[in-house]
Image 1 (cartoon, rainbow, N blue to C red):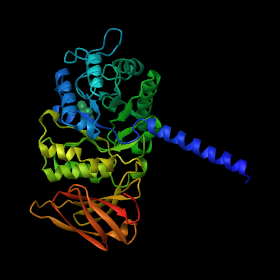
Image 2 (cartoon, protein in one colour):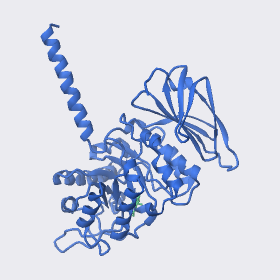
Image 3 (cartoon, rainbow, N blue to C red):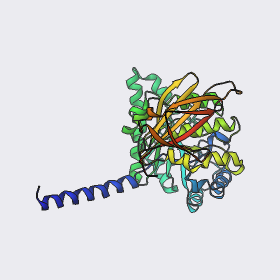
Image 4 (tube, helix red, strand yellow):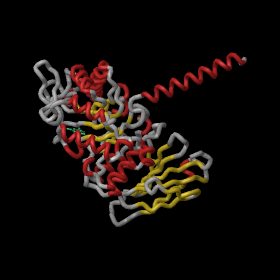
Length: 403
Ligand code: GLA
């Protein structure tokens, strides 16, 4: 290769890198979306004042600065359509545009909820759904200033039941989601498209093809350990379907809602971060305890979730009630979760991690993320005491990697 061709090649590589960086930077949901959603705490009992108060608390508490930016209004906002077919909020939300402006003025983004059921069928609660009105609804959402749409499956079940084969049922769903995605695109306003589809027909395999930026892989989370653990640990094997712009979603956080212990909530936060799951808080932000705040805003834990490589972690192995999960990170280090699923609350357990198994070399540097403490150089077997239903979350660096 002569010097001229070499120069051209180098130029092409530089331009290529710049273009790639630009595309990645501007990509919607380049890292798992972070925010808050009304459903887990408030159910459909929401109104304009509730949402404004949550937005205020998102900022004053420091949650926004930790990365939580979406304020997502779930089921409960919809009203009767106008005679023209135009969607309208109910009386609890007198001016959705003004609410959106308020949320935006705080440096936050607005999310909203709908579902694809046939015209006239109510969505999950008693509210109308978007089927047959996709373009109108997407246009109204865009006019309001919506940045995120959670699109449920409610109302579509009858059509799916009528389908002759599972493939036909999948097509019913895929068509409904694709239609809404096209409608959003047509508005020209970027909106994160969140498919609330419960993981039916392995949506992780086709969620991207219908424009999903994230898709539920499970039914609804509950504020209790058994359900949260069933959903979170059930994600093993799904890692390859997630990546920048498209994430597996094992449902929202329950941290701070009162049904679990601090150790159990620490498990949810750690596992969700290892899973590169969207971090959508579901507690009342206006009444957060210091413990809840600390769990939701630990920067080193959030950095695992938001790692730019966007690689979802997976289970390395189980040993009786213990599980070890690993997530490769962009700088060559790995996040490691040591989980104790033992039900007996009195019993903590010692989990042995064979460090060589991480593939980072014989000797490694270890940091405990929840303690915020370097454990120093280690090799061989690392022994950790893990509380029942709890976790030790580590970041392990190859010795030569710069930190
Ligand atoms: C479904 C979803 C929940 C919530 C409710 C609202 O159950 O999975 O997250 O949106 O609908 O009715």
